[in-house]
Structures are given as structure tokens and as C-alpha cells.
Image (cartoon, rainbow, N blue to C red; front, side, top):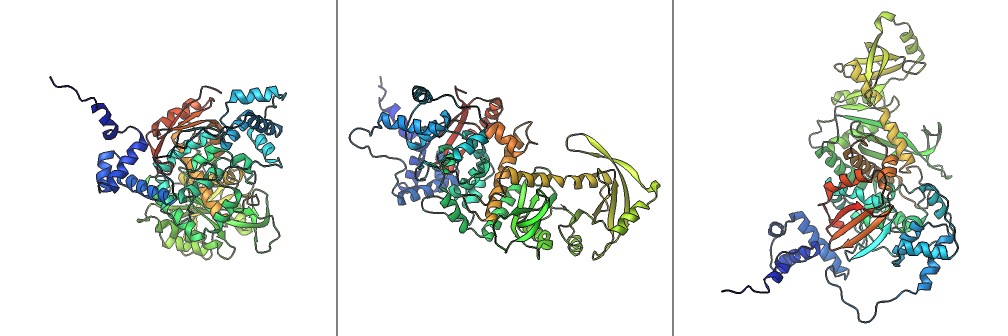
Length: 588
């Protein structure tokens, strides 16, 4: 009778690894020692070839920086201990600055003090502190930002998959990461011409900006609010986000060509995933400048209802999914009329066929009538408003009542509205050919609206509805200003406006992709999505190639967990190909 070899069970440790870090080690060994190709390793290990190449690249970079990703040398002697008095003093000092218990817990984790919430509460109670009054999140941020004494956050370094546990105010921010991988945005960032440093890679650099945008941080100068949160650092593949000086210096190395190249690559992603329809809404927005420099032109600001020194920016939005596909903050008065042609070139250069775009919808002062002729010659349908002249208004008043008719226009919420319209075929100065004019009364304005288009086939109902949806981009612009703080460029971080606009577009689209998949919330604005899902504290545990995010209980958590369960098998290259698992914490 043959005896079973007692080592058979141990052999599986080397032949069938379970840990993702163990799998990576064996895959790299096959490449460097056994001479296997990336495709062969992918077949054996279950990776894709591109993942194998990413692992090889990251492995070489870590060795260059003298970082061993797999083996850590054990140091002799006792582990360094932290004196209890130091922890108590730190907790008391933080409480004197009106830090809440979660604030103190997050800060202590960043400083390397592993202390439970119960222990922190006990120290505070024994020191005689009363409970803090209930405050909303913005009040907390303003209170923390007003402190003159700043805590010194750790030096930013790359993510290390060693076992670790820490707290985060914005653990829910990690719920956006699956969309970075799902739509290949991480690959677009890695292939972009944006700069990188030896310590902070290209993707970590860009995601650091995006993390601030997504987290609704409106006061960039408050380092101790976001530089101490390791959850925000984990989002970008770092221990903590860089300091304000780094953001300014990085932005100074970015050019307009880099932003255009990046937006073109993102445009290809949106096209490949059928996120863009045949229509694009375009509009200008003024980003105010509050200094004394005379080089800035005066532009009309709808938010403040006056003209002021500002930077003129343009945005292009898809009305179906709310995706922003283009932005430019380099517009001047002498070239703003040609912006529409620049967008058309951008769209067609980033789309090999260029056939999907059929309609451009914009305001009356967005471009010139001469450029409308150019669009017509390029077989692009446009829908815009004609400027009202005194003679034209008189002409509309003289139209016989029998020529007017009422139509019902459906709205996005399933309701409808009845308006009175009249249609004529006419011509306008500086435009070659006939044009379709639609006059609208009973639209809530004293004077009638005049829609002009070169599309003679579209029904009146669809024409009016298509133009009315242009107002969605005005809502999106308002959202950029309020939530993504687009006009807060006078903060502690000096960031190039065009680069800031590009990062705003990326952050906005990530929110659109997120809420698109959450049933019942696809219509919500970024602030609502942030309040209900992203603004969620929690515990983060890193162990054995898995990042476990335990979110605090809240009303919308079951919906979020059910949704995030669909992405549990995704690997994140800038996080050492770890998986992220979301679950509910046992405490509120």
C-alpha cells in the first residue's frame, strides 16, 4: 500500500497561490527567471497581457527606488513604542481645536497612532470635555480650517500593500474608483502626456486632483482637513495626498496641448461606450478673476448678472447622459466666434468616423451667422436662437392669428407643456441660403423666442424640445461653479485654469457614470450624490492583496453596497493590483 507524501499539501503553496501578492511574485518570476512571455504568463496566471506588462513596469520602478515589493527585512529588537502621555496630549490638543472623535481618529491613524474610538472618547471624558454641538459637514470643515496651528502631515509616498488599518472621513470616495478601471480611464491617464515625478506617478498625480474635486473640498488651503485623510490618499495610490505647493508646481508644467490630447482620449472612451448621442450643447461660462491684472477681459457672468474681469471658458455637453466632452479656458473675445468650429475639429479628430454628431445647440451670441453657413456646408445641423430686432418683433406681432398653432412639448420628467408657435422660411444677413424660423409665444417671456435651424425635416415638437434641453448645460455649469468650485481659483492652491477645467470635466463625468448605474439616482446632481453616497466615513483594512472598506451605516448604504458588489473582482494597477471589497461597518 502506497503512503501519501506528507509534502503534497505543501506543494500547493507554490503551485496554486491564493494571495494576489503571491500570484504577482510567481508571475514576475516566470518572466525574469524562466523567460516566459507576457501572453504565456497571462494564460497560466489568469491575468491579461496588459496587466502583466503593468506589473513588470511597476516592479522595475520600485527596484529603482530601492523598494522591495515582496520581502521586508525583519528588524532586530523590540518595536518602537509610543508613550501613552504623547497620545493623550495629542488627543487633548486636537479636541481643543474642536476636532470631533472621528476627526481625531482619522488624524491619529495618519500620525501612526493606533487608537480605538472608545479609547479616544474615554480620554476626552476624563479630561472634562463636553460633547460638541451637532454641526453639518461644511461647518466642520470651516471650523477645522480656521485653526492657526496646522498639523504636519506625513510625507507623501506610494501605496504599500502591507497589512494596515486606518479610518477615513471619505471612505465612500473609493466607490468611484471602479469606474476609473471599468471605462479604462486609468489607461488613458497613463498614456497621456501629463508630467510625473519619481515619487508620484502620472496616474497618482491626476487622481490627486480628481480626489479634491470629487470630495467637494472648497478651501484648498486647509491642509489639515484633507492632507491628513489616508482614504483620499488611497484613492490616488498614495499614503496621503500631496501638499498645496505640489499641486501648484505640477499645474505649472501642464500645457493646453496636454489637456486637448487628454480630452481627445476621453472622447474616444465615451464614444466606445455609447455615452454620446448625436447632439452636443455648447455654452460659455465666465470664471471671475479678483486681482488687479488688466490683461483679463470683461465677460458677462450670468451668476452675478453683470460683466466682470474673468476668463471665458466653453463647455460641450451631451444632453442624453450629461457627459461633458469638451472644455477650453483659453477663449478670447477675438476668437470666441470660431470656438464652435474648433469644437467641430476636436470632435472629428477624436472620432475616426466623425459621423455621429448631427446637431449643435447653442445660444444666440455663441457664434456668428457666417459660421452658421460654414456648419451648413459641413452638413451639421444647428439649432439656436435668433437675436431679436425691433423690426422682427413688429413682424411677429403682425402675423395673422390663423397661422399660429398650439403644440405639446414633452419634458424630461414625463410631464408636458403647451406653447403657441408659428413657422416661416426666411433668410438672414451673412447666412447663405434659406433658414427655418420658429416663433414661440406663451413661453413665460414677454417677448417671443425665435428658434432658427437649418433642419427642415425635424418636427416642431422635437425641435422645441431639443433646444429646451440646452438649458441643461446651464445647470451643469452652475454645478461646476458650486460643487466643483470652478471659480475658486483664488484659493491657497494656484492651478492653471484650463487644467483645472479639464480635471473638473473628468470629476463631473465620473459622478455621471456613478449615478447612471444607481437605480433611481441618474437624474441627481453631484451635490446630492456626494451627500447620499460619497460622504461616508469608514474603516479601511489592507491585508493579503485585498482592501476592505467598511462604511458607516446610513440610509442609502444598502443600495450602495448592492451596487458596489458588481465591481468586487476588479483589480487596480496603481494599488498593486489589489481588489476592493465594500461592506457595512458594525457601528454608526
